[in-house]
Image (cartoon, rainbow over all chains, first blue to last red; front, side, top):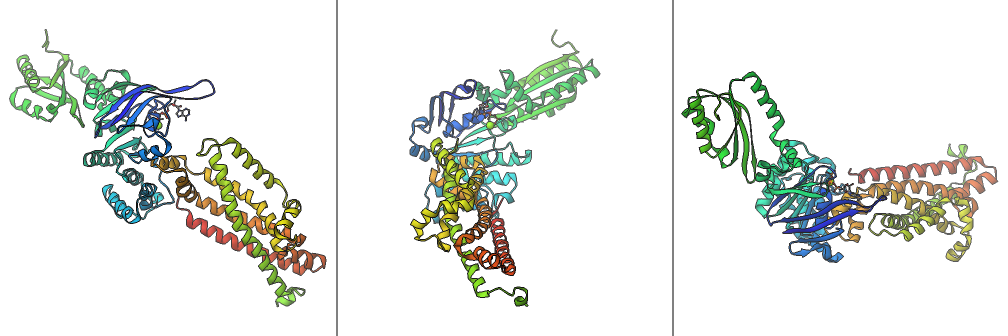
Length: 346
Length: 222
Ligand SMILES: Nc1ncnc2c1ncn2[C@@H]1O[C@H](COP(=O)(O)OP(=O)(O)OP(=O)(O)O)[C@@H](O)[C@H]1O
Ligand SMILES: [Mg+2]
């Protein structure tokens, strides 16, 4: 659906050009929710704004839905933009228009007839759950409601692609989740391709299928969300993954347990995909004669399946512990021994 | 009672003067709004980083606006006498005051329009571009509606300044309350007529301010 080929973008400045993007290759498939994560100044906004040519690339090729965006004439570009919706961090609504008026705007721009416009606006208001607020002005809406208007407006002309530049960064966690649910719902219902720019791993985890990590103008890591989460390669990716696994707090908890239970055995269970759904702990309690203490646990759901860890303190005789570990591994769950007081390995 | 307070007032003459002042104010406001919005838009869209960025046009319009805004109004009237005589055929009377009034206030209003347009969030214009809006659609559907409260409060300020200009024009024969205050009041030593003219001007200004504030508030949905 979207292809970027060795895209470069530099901004002229007094002391030489600032290179915001230095050679981006990216391919986003139809119907995918593609997350692009990076720190402030990484070039995320620049990248997404290239896709609808709000920004002109310095070099490279950009293809959206089979059209070479960078070679379109002004008129063709305006037409092409009707197939690419966009929502913004600060919503960018017209405050002089009501909810209805704002959603109607892109339809007016596209020259849709009045009666048809009215019908479409009603559909969209229902789709984003703003019934009853049609005649409110943006200043009378909450942030979440404003973003819903933004989404309805972006979808008005049935685009094939939706670009989201930090669409939830101005919202509180609860509202963020409701907006993400809405986007996920739209993606499933309409088969829309969504590009999500964010600096929050939570957003990627919750709705993205794929993710690319952008660091100072370069994509340093890319892949399925589940794979990247389980196996982050670059340091920056690891930092982002830590945002949701709370690894540091978990490590602290385990360290504390090592000190207070120097003679216990501590193991870490690594779940992935379907294994996270099985009641393994329950079965352990029932089948093995070991005492189990849960020290820490964190299971995350992604669009490609679940993953997470569970750290246990196990007590019992060495045979029982070994058999417990064998059992866990048979269930397709990885086991890592963190403190080996019973000397299982030797 | 009014007669004892203002012994020298000729009420029908006063009413005539009020109507002339209103005539000059209303016509010149209408022309100023049209001209000012055109010039203000031109300044805005040709400024650096905007839709029709054009250094030469911006510099020229900006220079013209600044020059006419800096000339004291009373001198502007005199400078425009030749133009007025060509346009109107005479340099006396309320209609003859109009060119000077419009030339004096349009550049002032144009700057207010430009400032109002600059207040519009760049993100909103960008959102319209992202939706495929053309430049004209952006002007009609985004720039003008979004700056309407600023345009309206600008008109109020300009209209009040214009009432003052009509009084000045009155001194050199434009008619209206200015002429009344100067000819009938000052030159004949009838200070009651001067005071009466002043009261009328104040009433007109207050009414303009009231209407202007009311409309601006109604338009402002922020
Ligand atoms: N119009 C511009 N002119 C000059 N430099 C720019 C311009 N826009 C962006 N840059 C530079 O390009 C780089 C990337 O900026 P960009 O806005 O894409 O970052 P970002 O990842 O979106 O950051 P944030 O999370 O803060 O929004 C920065 O170094 C920035 O200073
Ligand atoms: Mg940004």
